[in-house]
Length: 402
Image (cartoon, rainbow, N blue to C red; front, side, top):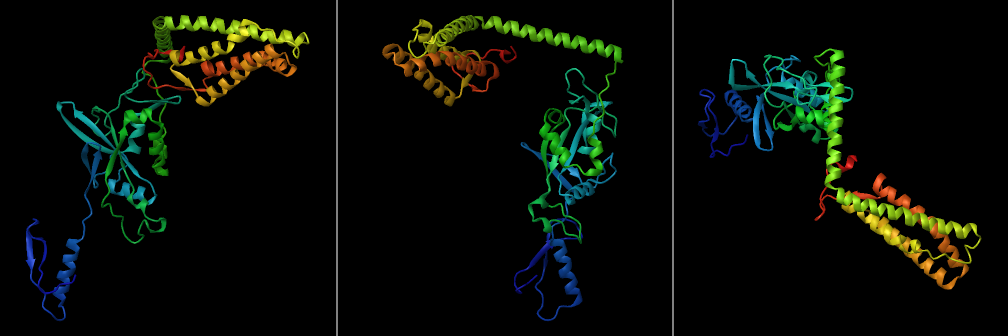
């Protein structure tokens, strides 16, 4: 450190440990003595940033707690400092779990325990087939306790992601081989809870991706075993399934009754749609099989009202199911029915072969294409999108399941 002979240097007093500033006088010019060199080196060491003894844990509302790096994971038997540095050198982040417990003899007092998330996943989750069973499951909830104190867990288990700050550096310059990693600037960010873990495949994938190979077996969950025996479990599952079916059927019946006025209109239009389309198809087939498809067009009333009926019926999709057909398909449909109407008019008026052939052909293929498109709208729903907010249209309940 350079000194110009006039500005003093300050450092914290090593004797008292306080933050009182102790003045060191200007250095005399000339060759430094060994004592002076030792004092300068000591001063530089004191001014260097010190390694943290704790890591702060944060969420969106602010700091939630501190993780003592020298504490040992009660299951893995390794300090958190070593676990974090081990994960960092493997180009991974580290996930820590915060578990809150309440003592049995003092329900007003609450304390927190920290664990590596990979060491407690197996303790607070089970699996039933492909389903993750947690403490919050509706029918198959499990009980879990603090593995160290054997006290009941209070609230949700919180997970914090300790990000690897060295991943921001180039790959060859991340980890110095000749000294220990520094954890300056490292902190924990709230990732989610055990409730989130059970319902978020993305969170589960993130935790597994940052788990070292040596700990991957800890993420393999045990199969859920109901406390009742198998015979009673079969009976219970059957009753639960019957009750669920009964509730679903009741919801469908209530929904159908509540929106019956809409479905009466929709059902009437469906009948008209089928009759008009069928009459138009038969009309076109009669002209074709009679060998007069180039000579005459039978002007049935059904063929004239078919385009209007189809457009109105497809528009019912918005009122009944809160869905809307894509604009490009709607425009193509308008063009097709405009050509259909023009061919019918020109075929009847001029009786030219080309117009008669086009009109009779469209009377065959028009209803068929319309039926396929309407099925895609109402049943398959490939040509429509869901409407989130539509004024004046009430969203039917459980209509997606009908």
